[in-house]
Length: 154
Length: 483
Image 1 (cartoon, rainbow over the protein chains, first blue to last red):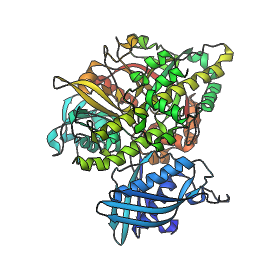
Image 2: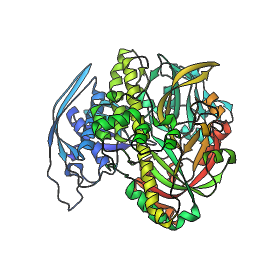
Image 3: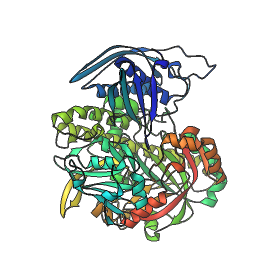
Image 4: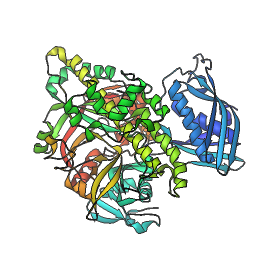
């Protein structure tokens, strides 16, 4: 799936920032939410290390398996994004989702497994995100697909 | 939809929403504001979030919004709520992700006239020596055992390492050392995020300013704080960096499950909490205090870097470069304190999120030299505008759990601010007013433009008018250092 498959918009907040994303299915929704998060953090395309036009794209570095577990689907989205945020802060790289290999959601347990790639950053981030919050968190069916709303503490 | 008509005006600057306003409210909600500021607060979710705060189990008295309130996540920024011990709750989201974000004021022995010829060099030296901005690491990289010492003992560790003076420590809230800190409750991830960040400002609304004392508003108290007209002072505004953010993230996640186990239901998941007398509540208390100690040490190391910068930039000219610490105070914290509620002394956990402790004269926690006049309260204004030094009052003890405002209060979103002003243009305007700006990010500068904030003067007139602080001095900026 490519960036073009994701639809997202910024949500207003007096002090913080949020986004709403739409996708045709749940794995795509989680991939799009990750893209929306890193699109706020970096100028340029996060999948290319924030490369601007005419800049060479850095080769991806480490591939990581990411597994997150949560009591419900909404918490799973927060856990997933916080995990990527942590990996970004620990490595200094931008996290690109290669694939979501499993996503299960039961009434009292949700689990996601994914392969994420650390893309070395060419530029300093433009936004520091402290955390992904549960504030007005939504993951819900929307027409034929899914919609999520997330607020970040910045 | 909440409107002005839902409030009862208890006094000129005090408005109350009764408990009957919403079925799940446990106590009334009070807002300290002028009518204009209350109307402003009603334009976002601040008041709805304040009402949500009144639903916390064990909350006592009333939940309070300060005049600089704005919407946060879960709990409003500019909010205060006290929960009764032993079984009332502690709520990480009601303290905030930046645990012990706070302000430190250092006073020089210099006047504006003495510093002005060297101000450009001084601003550049401060920017070079005091790490700021995204991903910027600190001068000190701690070993694991050293980081645990910082978490356990905060500014006390700095004193032992010759990074603080005894006066610095005395002039810090709680002497910069929350004794209930438990480093073992701080996750390995939080350790990892904090290890290289001691002595860093960070980004966002954090800053370091060289200010002048533009006006002394209470001569007696200003004299006790060692402040006089035209004096050059330094404000440092920052917190516990990635370490504190991770502690809050960890416990907001873990408490989702804890709430279910304790059958607690709240209107916003970001308000999650645990009873203080449970293992989970105590674990967060230990971790939060450890993060708060890290923040005290962070501002202390920055104070050392500021002192080195003054020595480097002004020392060769023969000017005195000593900087004395006036005070250091938190505005995102949870503290166990005694307060009188309905005529009865009670031990409570005071959650202050975007609110500053403002203890009255004679309070036993105040250092000897400030005991007659009350605790210094440091209120940074928006960039390029005035900041204030206030003093704690008996009114704050009686009305607001010894708390008052923390700043100007955000009014416009960062995106909206950037649409209205460009960083380069703002820097130019500030330069034209004689304010030197050293900033890593022009976009970050635009986000903090004064037009994004409420007028700080209006906030100060409310807290003074309501008697929950006394204005002591007005500071105006000479140089601003930002990430």
